[in-house]
Length: 193
Length: 380
Image (cartoon, rainbow over all chains, first blue to last red):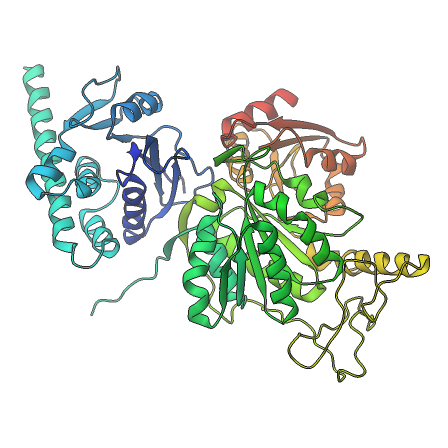
């Protein structure tokens, strides 16, 4: 049977927790009974610089471990957005954190601009959970993993005592994404009319 | 309670190496952390004390290798992990371990070189160093994993070969395999072989530390159990004391090599995919073999009869296994993340019977399946 591999790229800067987000997304895929590979690319610096975590999810074997043409890309800094947007699939989705990404590069992908870090800071009081808000947005706008799987995977990974905060962060990302998606659909209908 | 299905778990390559070492019964790690191998040290630092083992961060990699040899002489299964720059520093003591026949496992998660090179990027530039990094004619065993699961299995295998043949074994990983995470379902303890070194059957008075018992591998007494003997990097007779008698020098070197070359069937492992009817062979190892496997699938879909030969043991080089194919397969493509290292061995094995074409990438990026497909189409 031909299996379809789904590719996700989470990009930003070192220290934003995107590798952890990639690990959680991959673990959610396992919760769904799927096969997965997670890779990362970062520079020698502990913070700063463009970094990315990539996840491939498939019902079959995954040989080449790197993402070639992601269907969804998250960009949490302008630098990462500019650097990695090039290979995004034509029909792909680009989710940018509007807190840091102000200029959307030329792309045929559908762009969702969400204030991810601002949400974490203002609605949850912790910028630290921006990566979990982002995961909520990514999984809300795609169905790469089920909602239950991502909730379970987040709760299994986060430190004890922060479960509620992280679950809230995930839901907020999910809600913002769904609202944006509805707005987008409405816009399309208006355009069609 | 609902039934929990075991879908496996997400594991990193370096983590699989550390877990494999523990599963093989290692009780000692000494080394110096270095990207992209650091997680191996980090995990063993946490877990070794929990199983009564010891973890020591040494002053440098030279000390790390020395401590591993010392620990092994006391009977502990010992391991160190590093990357290119540290692997360079370990070479002197690695040769000592070969000469003094001290079992140990040396992991090198390869990154871009030379020197400190590109710390966070993958490469396969240490393939020849694994073979010839330490001086003098010496045998060596080097294994190279393709996946997280295989990293676990080969770490265990590395210990087994090391203990069985009283020799250092190199686990030659690369950054891609070390850092990637994938879903794994690992075998449970008891589902794989764990080899323990052969100990003397005689008391300390009758014990000769380097007397061949007919197997080529002398039984090894542990320091601290009443046996005392001399351990040296000089050529030594069966008492362990130095000798420079020509017949002794030859005898020792012959035995060191023979204990490996007589057991190639136990040591050499390779995976062959779609080679039965192949008109072109891709020879690839480590993370590049993953791209090669995908390339074979793409080529087959396009009607090209391609197959993959993946050496799991790269040293000793699997010449005989490879040669079986060269009577029929006349085209070979060898992708490597270096400027061409193992390709020379493939050419040597082909001995002019097949045309061997290298495909090299050394910019710190993994060779892609498309690059391999294009090279194959070019040579056909």
